[in-house]
Length: 209
Image (tube, rainbow, N blue to C red; front, side, top):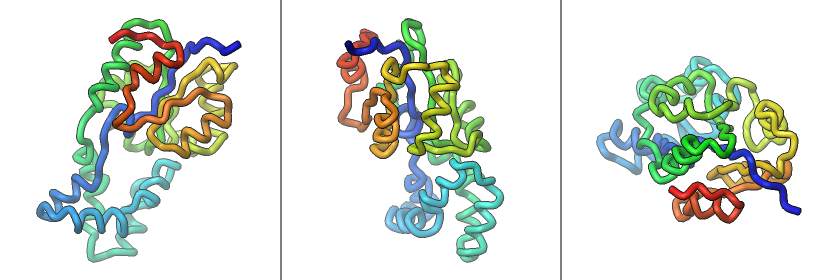
């Protein structure tokens, strides 16, 4: 018999909020999107940024990149000095789903995000709905990142979920989805073609927005 869902775990970036450093650097490089894409692919890469999600201090990350690309010192420092300018705003249709879950209080709602501990307070300030979650696991704070199995184990314990089958996890990264699925968690792989309300309904969650 299939276990009844009682908890919903949200990823943040790409599910509830849009963050795009290429968009930010396009402005910095005088609307040259090609140069901005080169900068993100070559200088301030997502792989480099991911180390901050793992817990590396921003000052250390910036110092490393400036030493590697001294010509771009000013632009490198902008990455975190003006980090919030990379946000394109909330993903409204999914925030409506979150709002319904928050208001109806039929399900526990939690957050599980790969995010620098130093930067997470900025996200809380920009997006007040972050405060609606009963608990949030921030990768940088515990120095574990998705899709490491250890972060799912940690999150389930933190959220007091003894049976993973009673939970659904929403993430836009397939590797993270695979990691959670391997732990026995129900998953929704989100992209902009997915209707989140309908996907949740298929798992037995009727929020009727």
